[in-house]
Image (cartoon, rainbow over all chains, first blue to last red; front, side, top):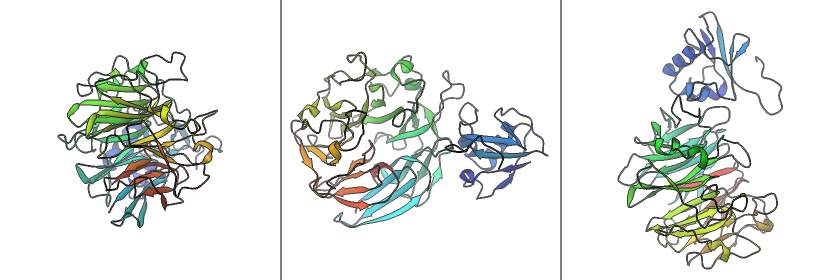
Amino acid sequence: MKVCIPTPLRSYTKQEKWVESEGATVDDVLADLDTKFPGIRFRVVDEHGRLRQHMRIFVNQEAIRDLTTSVTSADELTIMQALSGGCGPARVP
Amino acid sequence: MTKLLVGTRKGFWSLTSDGARETWSIDGPEFLGHIINHAVADPRNRDTVLIGASTGHLGPTVLRSQDGGRTWTEASKPPAFTPGDRLERSVRKVFWLTPGHADEPAVWYAGGSPQGLFRTEDAGDTWAPVDGWNDHPQWQTWAEWPDTEGTPDGSMLHSVIIDPRDANHLYIGLSGGGVFESTDGGNDWAPLNTGCAMDFAPDPDAPFGHDPHCVRLHPLMPDRLYQQNHCGIYRLDRPDTTWTRIGDNMPRDVGDIGFPVELHPRDPDTAWVFPMDGTDVWPRTSPDGRPAAYVTRDAGETWTRLEKGLPERAWFTVKRQAMTVDDGDPVGVYFGTTSGEVWASNDEGESWAPIAQHLPEIYSVEVG
């Protein structure tokens, strides 16, 4: 599946915005990303597997916080940082 | 030549001097936009530099250089609580870094928010919780928990100190919480706060709950500790367990509130502080907006104001990691400000000159 990487995390992906990853759940995808780009997962998810407070993940157009959410290779996953300090709720860019 | 490592709200810089410490050049930014809480060189191997970063939206991490800051890698296992932690604690920032004992050349300690203690045995690549502290039966009583991001920067564990005579003898400082001591390598801990004021607390005589801002141990007199506390400046000469408020000897109109305290590397009687305004709502700027360091050369009996070269009026704060000394003769003294300036003295604080300006808010200044 295609994963969109936000600019704060592109130091891990050699500045690539779109990367390929795979997995049956969002958590699996993040784990797969971490094998390809070591360290990236811990910047997004804490030591208890919780999405960090100021991070957001979208499966296609839907924001999710449950990392056990199922995904397929046809889905598109977007990782982004929450827009805080003057903006409304985070929206798909 | 002296090198300074400068951690800021928005990146990392280094400053390098000539031999006289009069002319300085600046390198950076590195990690522009990242929150650099502490950048520390290893006195056992100056090529090793660790950075504690927290970086806005992203999780906290440790960045490592093994070539004096030319190239960097990220810790493969940054400081973190154990998955399944009983309190579900999560490291919010890596706030403080301390190189370990000389006999343990790859060991470092890190203090965080929440007030966890972490240790590496491979020079910062992989970190593990210090369970004796993080899971101490009294941790929830001693530490600020639930964790808060309240004024000004939330709770943190800082001032990790290793006794140069004994790698198992440790001190830590909790803002807030107090000073704690371990004599068994961090397995068990006890408060060490008797004598420190706690003006803000309902029970000012409680054995913990204090707010040490910065604690230092003199390497040549390891029984001597200095402390800049939320409520005064203190000295403790072990095995005594009662701190003496040496800040009572500061001028009354200046007071003895501040963040940093720094020690002369060869003279245990000499220490520098940078007083701030702790009245009213705690502006944390210099008293009356007149910046000055103070030095004692008699272990706190008397203090001398050091302001030559500093602005007559200014409204910055000097944070707890943002003051340091080198080992030159005379000693160089340095501080960074929340307004993004680094000031240097090559004559032990007698006179000051700015060596960097217009940087982001400075969180730490250490000798590289």
